[in-house]
Picture 1: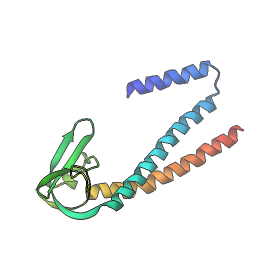
Picture 2 (picture 1 turned 30 degrees about the vertical axis):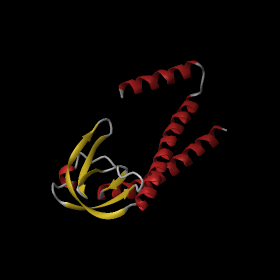
Picture 3 (picture 1 turned 135 degrees about the vertical axis):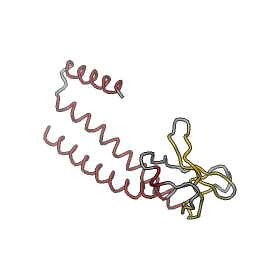
Picture 4 (picture 1 turned 135 degrees about the horizontal axis):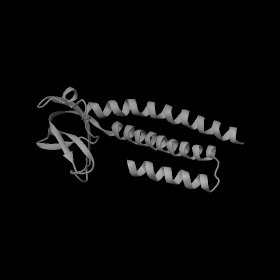
Length: 155
């Protein structure tokens, strides 16, 4: 994180030395944030489409399993097999959300061609999608409005 901050500071200093107006630098930074927000909205739209393709079923919660480089995932047992949740587990409230050996309602999609391909969403993932899509949509909308306002002021 520190490398990112130092790199951003160096880029800003170089732009200022080259004579780029500070308002233009601020607008560029704001545009990068807006791009991130739009990408998050697209992520949640894709997640919602995938959620609509799943079917509800029951599964037994087993444990939280750390995956290499992807974060931690809740592991569920059904159909004589373990399934990883597709969304990362919420670590801060792990004792409140997940209870060992409890049966949960989950949503799953399985590939007909390749049984190893699946998408499993637990109730926490469904809540994240349901809350994330409208929140990030509003943030992206307000950000776009702000960006367009800044652009009109600069003209």
